[in-house]
Structures are given as C-alpha cells and as structure tokens.
Image (cartoon, rainbow, N blue to C red; front, side, top):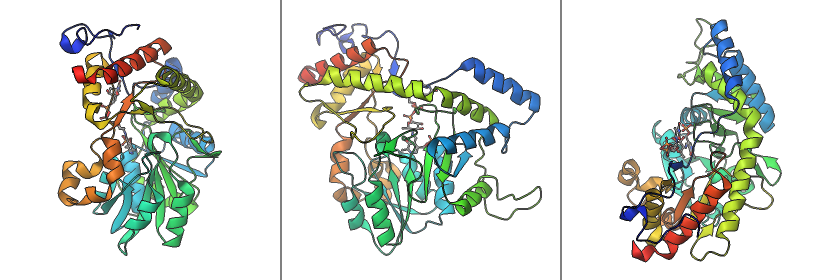
Length: 390
Ligand code: T4K
C-alpha cells in the first residue's frame, strides 16, 4: 500500500510522517491573486476603505444574484451577522438550535441574553430532527435556528411548517452552505433570513466576513442600519446598532473568489469522489453521503468511525501530518459555558452525543492532489484496522 507503513513505522513511534507538509481541514481557497491586487490598488487610489464602499456594494449585488435573493447585507464575519440577524428578528427568551454545530451558533444567542435550547439531530444527516424540534417547544420559545451542517440542507420544509404552526421565527445558519442547493432550490432564500460565513477556512472566503441573505425588504433595511450603528445619515441615528461593516479589501477578495468558486467546488467534488472510491467497502468507516437531489459544495469530507477508536485514529492521522478534525466535538452543550448553564441538556441529545464521538473531518480542496486523497484514505483505513495496536 502506497505511503502506508506498519504500525511500528508510523510517526507515532518515531518514523517521519507520510506527508512532508501538513494537510489542513480548511486550507484557504484563493482565486486570481493578480486580479485581487489590481482591485486593491484601485481601492487605494479611491481612498475608500470601508463603510459601504463601491466594492462592498458590487459584492453584495453579486452574492445576492448568485443566491437568487433580493438582499445580501455583508458583514465583518459570520458570528456578527448571526448576532445582528437574531436581533433584527427580535428573538428573545428561548431559541431552538442544534448542539451539534460550531459554537458561534449558540454564542450568537447567549451573547445577547437569549437562551439557546439544544435540540437533537437526525444521526443519518447530522441536521436538526424535526420531531426533536417539536418536543422542545415551550411558551418561552420565540424562534428556531436551523444549521445546514457540512453544507447538507437542513429539513427546510419541515422546519418552516413547525415555525408556521407555532408562530416562531425561523432563520438559518448557512455558514457551511455557500453554493449548495436543497432539491433544486438554492440555499439562501429559506426562513426569514440565512446567514453566511466567509471565513478563510470556508469554501468561499473574504479572509473574514459574513452576510445575511433575505427576500424581506424591511428586514434588510433594519440589518443595514444595525451594522452601521443605526446611522441613517451623517448625524442621524435612528436605530440601535453596532459595527458589523465589511471592509473594502474583504469585498475585493470576495469578488475575485466568486469567479473561481466553480473551480473550487469542482476540485472538492473530485476529491470527495476519490475518497468515496478509496473508502468503498472499507469496514468500520462510514462516509457521510449527500442526498442525490442536493447539489453540495463538497467542502467537508465527513467520516464516522466507532467512538471507541476515534481519538486514536485522529492521533495517527495527526502523526502523519494529516490534521483531521473532530468537528464538532464535544457538542455545544458540553462546552464549559453551556455545561454550566445547561447541566441536564445531554439527556435530550442522544444522537448528538453519539455522532460527536464518531466524526472525523478529513482535509480536501484544490491544494491536495488526488494521490494525497488516496494516501489519506489508506492511512485512515490502516489506522482503523490497527487501532488496537496504538
Ligand atoms: N456557524 C457555523 C456553523 C460555523 O461553522 C461558523 C464558523 C460560524 C457560524 C461563524 O462564522 P465566522 O464568525 O467564523 O465567520 C474554524 C473557523 O474559525 C470558523 O470560521 C468555522 N466556522 C469553524 C468550522 O472552523 P477553527 O478554530 O477550527 O479554525 P482555524 O483557524 O484553526 O483553521 C482551521 C485550519 O485551517 C487550521 O488547521 C489551519 C488552516 N488555516 C486556517 C486559517 C485561518 C490555514 O491554512 N490558513 C488560514 O488562514 O475554527
């Protein structure tokens, strides 16, 4: 087997790792660097660096058109975009969220005095379970935040039906889902609004950045006011607000990367299928598959192994310079702030607990060759087969 050695040879026991350079989950995708530099030079000539400059406006139009929505309100990162969207929707009391998500989804609520109520997932999709959502609704509930985890669409229709039935606001954390579709419908137009992240590690990045997408004109207007301290003119503050503005240089990166997005997604797709082929039939490794009707960005390659071996397998991969990640272990409800405020949450989250103990996210993207993918898959299979030896 190419590059894969016996347990005695593995780096854990002192041998050099399989990869001379580290393979990261989330290595940034960068489009045409020269085009970016040209945009930056023009930006300096204009001396317009932030606050709704021409690049931000062009970027917002492009992202809105790409997602087929009326409004894209760009922000400085996805977390601030979540916070501002939550406030603009006037959520309060309790809001239902998955625990199996990045911590920002929960923090965006608790940061503003709203209690995240952690809801279990469907273990086959890693997304919110509509039945579990129904069970957790109380008179204190004001909203639901669905997460399209790994770019797999959340159960958008079922969540909307529940929200309508109980008069709850529904929004989505779509940080992973740039360019994804749910059965032919592009992510971006579901619920009252959807929130994107353009962090460096995402399929589409602006260094840091985020946005709220919505078809609601009134909501978009409120979001725009809130991201700029509530200013309606030079001297006129008509709304509470904060500083959520996206600088021009980030928008320049976004405009350049948007042109290369099809290339990034094609590279991800090819690597996903290479993993699929290499791991087909391998006992003890389950690759999370996409629904045939969806059109994913393939940015996260997610496998599950038995919980008893997961950490050992990750340690072997790390020793081989494959920086696989245990996203999103241990689940938000087990992170210190929520462990303290939600001591009994685990009882309602059996699928979350099981999945969080099983998942490994593998590196992918244009910076890896197909041969790299095959080597990582071989190492993974090897580590699973021999986990008892470590
Ligand atoms: N909702 C969800 C569901 C999210 O996943 C996120 C963010 C958000 C909301 C909030 O959006 P933002 O406020 O971030 O826009 C990361 C990211 O910081 C975070 O953006 C992301 N989700 C989360 C899934 O992952 P870390 O701590 O794992 O990332 P970091 O900085 O360690 O980078 C991961 C790997 O990427 C590293 O091993 C090295 C590599 N890397 C990273 C950077 C920044 C590079 O090679 N180059 C780089 O420039 O949290």
